[in-house]
Image (cartoon, rainbow, N blue to C red; front, side, top):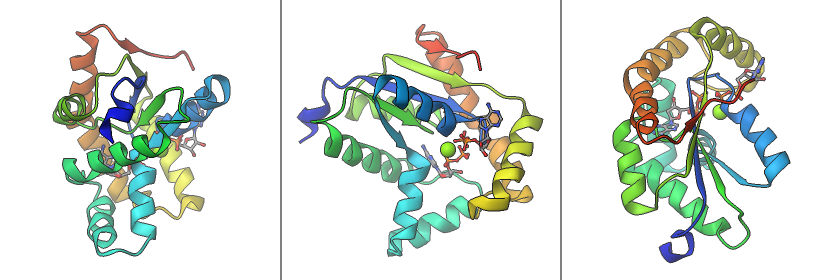
Length: 175
Ligand SMILES: Nc1ncnc2c1ncn2[C@@H]1O[C@H](COP(=O)(O)OP(=O)(O)O)[C@@H](O)[C@H]1O
Ligand SMILES: Nc1ncnc2c1ncn2[C@H]1C[C@H](O)[C@@H](COP(=O)(O)OP(=O)(O)O)O1
Ligand SMILES: [Mg+2]
């Protein structure tokens, strides 16, 4: 099964919470026809299913913490395999959240050819998320959780940008 995605074109899309990852991915999909897979969307679908695993995930996400690496990586891998026959390439949005996630992805699936870094100022991200929270219904779009997500982004996810910059595959789209 995993053979199906062995040579897939992989683009990581990384940025802070509310930086506009999902918004930019939709534009890339419209222009290039790649398959958009958001780790957050996959996790929220599991929560919406009402499963026991979904309940555990919901509690973690509500606190603004990262769910276990194996859970999110398995979900992405399954979603990639399901689309392998029709996909021209994959936009992996919201992953890796920490360097270790990138390393495990490369071991189990393959290497990215590009990392799109969606950059935004902290205050912009907070403003956008508070606004999104008015209608998103997301349990994590509230002031307290937003602060934790932002702290975690700077601590755990920014090193991902540094890691892939040294490999020369980071591009920052001009928005
Ligand atoms: N370039 C932009 N300018 C203004 N608002 C934006 C921009 N990009 C995204 N937004 C808004 O900011 C919020 C977060 O965007 P989203 O794409 O959901 O980010 P992420 O997936 O990174 O959390 C959304 O409400 C979106 O409409
Ligand atoms: N790669 C990943 N590893 C661990 N947890 C993840 C993850 N991607 C998403 N999550 C969990 C924790 C996040 O705070 C939550 C929402 O993710 P998201 O939809 O990508 O949100 P954001 O608006 O912060 O970009 O889901
Ligand atoms: Mg998103």
